[in-house]
Image 1 (cartoon, rainbow, N blue to C red):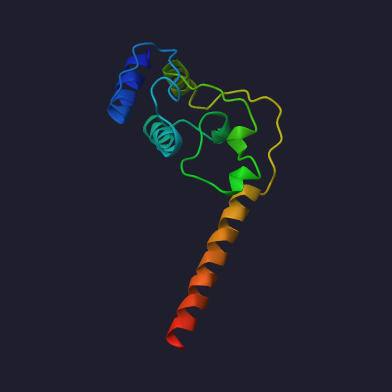
Image 2 (tube, rainbow, N blue to C red; image 1 turned 180 degrees about the vertical axis):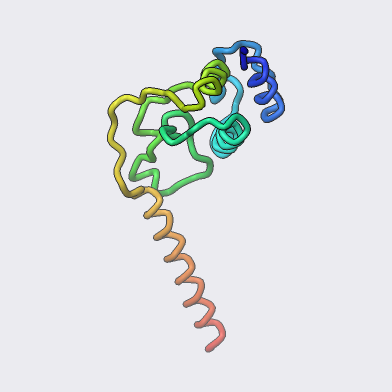
Length: 139
């Protein structure tokens, strides 16, 4: 059984765009990026019972939102070359029930220093607000 029509309908239901080419890049050509891409992959995995244990998100999509920490340290998706995900790939993985992308050798730091900087900025901001509030009520 060919799963390409089913996947094309799944992608259209999800994104509103029907992929008329089975080799279209879902990220670049269909505009399914960031959180939408993550959610689409999760729904795909659940619906078609595909084992995603070998899936490395940062090769296929980005993250949404601005990040001050990104100015100093690259997030994972900026440290690797993006690998397109196509409807044909998704259809093929339904048959094997396993995400089967061979990723190139790469090294991603264990800690996300970009996120640590963002968290530190939020903490400093909150502490500043608390100090300002305490100063205002004790005047």
